[in-house]
Every structure is written in structure tokens, then in C-alpha cells.
Image: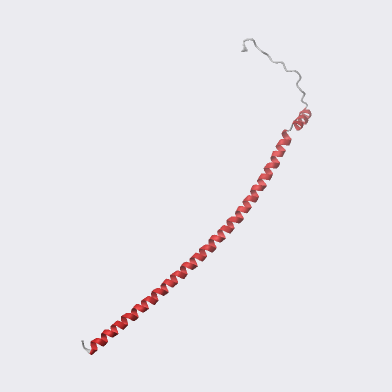
Length: 118
């Protein structure tokens, strides 16, 4: 090889090494950007999920409060039903309506066990 060919070969090798180094730097930058993008996406997702859980917690608290109010109302209504259906209350109602107590009740019994009307 001549002196000029050797110098051209050296130049080509150096140029190829520089290109490889630039490719590595570019690809590392791309990897870094992708890595940070993924981290940012994960942080935003975490914030969104945490916010959603907080909102659901408040909704659950409100629903439990509503359930307790409905159960209290149900207990009050059951107490009213018991009061309305109590024997004393029925006795008072009977007197105000003018009903009378039934004395002795006579039942009809048949020897044959069946009664028919013609």
C-alpha cells in the first residue's frame, strides 16, 4: 500500500469510530428521554389513581351516612307500627268506633260432619 492509501484508511476508520460514538450518544439520549417519559407517565397515573381512591372514599362515607339515616328512619317506623298495632291502642279504637265485646259464641255442629243448604 502506498502512503496515501494508508492515510485514507486511517481517516475512514476514525470517521467510522466517530459515527459509532455519535450513534451511542444519540441512542442514550433517546433512552433517557423515554425513561423520563415513562417515569412522568407513572407519576401522573399514580396521582390519578390516588385522587380516584380519595373520591371513592368520600362517596363511601356519604353512602354509609345515608344508610345509617335510613336505618334510623326504619326503626322509627317500626316503633310506630308497634304502637299502632298494640292491644291498648286497638282497645281505644274499638271504644271510639262504638264496638261491643262478643259474649258467648255459639257454634253449630253436625253429627255427620257436613252441612248443606237447600
